[in-house]
Length: 416
Ligand SMILES: Nc1ncnc2c1ncn2[C@@H]1O[C@H](COP(=O)(O)OP(=O)(O)OP(=O)(O)O)[C@@H](O)[C@H]1O
Ligand SMILES: [Mg+2]
Image 1 (cartoon, helix red, strand yellow):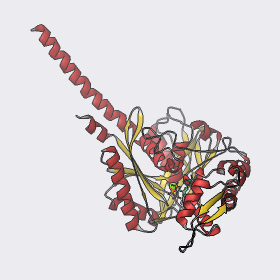
Image 2 (tube, rainbow, N blue to C red):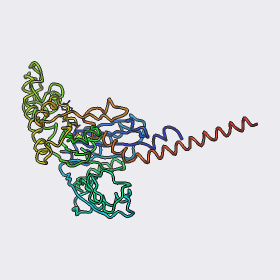
Image 3 (cartoon, rainbow, N blue to C red):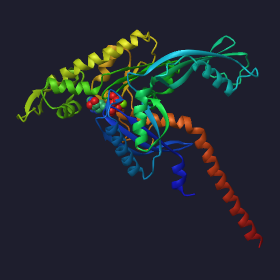
Image 4 (cartoon, rainbow, N blue to C red):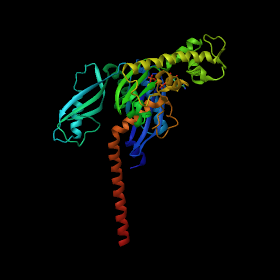
């Protein structure tokens, strides 16, 4: 078997359909972890606030991003882990209970109790994305993270269930299928992002991750290592750009460019007030404006956005429970000064989350806008890890057999 084929069997691919761009990554997986080998991107107009509104445009963007990733890696992607997000997502806690069959908890008992927790009435227009176990109780004893092997009679599970609107999810799925890709699984956008940027200590101590994209801020909160809350606010970096375009009377494209180049969420951080050149609309000649004017527009939008998030966290009762504070990620989090403004508004430590666990092309997919797509790989790797290691085992066996064959030949050669 050639190395190329061996790799081809252990590919993990991620596809993130965001409001501003589609990102496609191809990684090779082994027992040592992941190595990202290809990235493709396509900007498009097929998604609004994280929801597909134009199937044709989105399908084309997926095809383009996939081709680019295949070209870069020299590999063919067939199956993808795929992100789903938006304001249609709902999540809530649920509980289940079963009798332990053989007085010692097995993997099957755990599956049954999680299944029981899921067996609540879910309306037919909702699709379950995740059932994430929080903790288990055995014969009344609380706070058990993994009850396997423990003795008991009555096993209870508390889980967090994440559902989405079936029709909206199906529209996104249709785009992926039309691009001739199979789906390995659907993953909530901010769950994926959190896997790329968080350490296990942060999850243990309590943390909220905010993925600030182009069209949405998607939130996920961990307490004691488990997902306890998700939310989506339909505001993102595009709103910042739009405000700049209106405020400085310039085009969206120029507004986007000067936001990146000259923008600060905190005008005080911008240093000396230099003047910047902005394009005018309708063929008029460019003008110069003070950078502080740009920063004041960004400051107002940043403050409003962070306060909406703060309200969500406060309403859910997480103030004082997030020992690791807040991690912001997504392209919108790269706006300079946003972390510092966050420290102030949330009154908690805030840091920028970058996809740290990206192997291989870490420099290319290292930006905050790639957290989701890198997190999809992390999620896929966790799910497929056993199979990958098993397959590797079979490669090893064939290697060992041929090694044995060679030694046998050597033996006979010597004997002759
Ligand atoms: N350096 C930067 N400064 C300010 N804004 C930035 C910077 N880099 C990216 N952005 C903004 O980040 C946004 C895109 O982020 P991202 O790629 O994470 O979004 P998306 O995944 O396409 O959208 P969504 O997650 O909302 O569906 C844009 O609005 C862009 O202007
Ligand atoms: Mg995104």
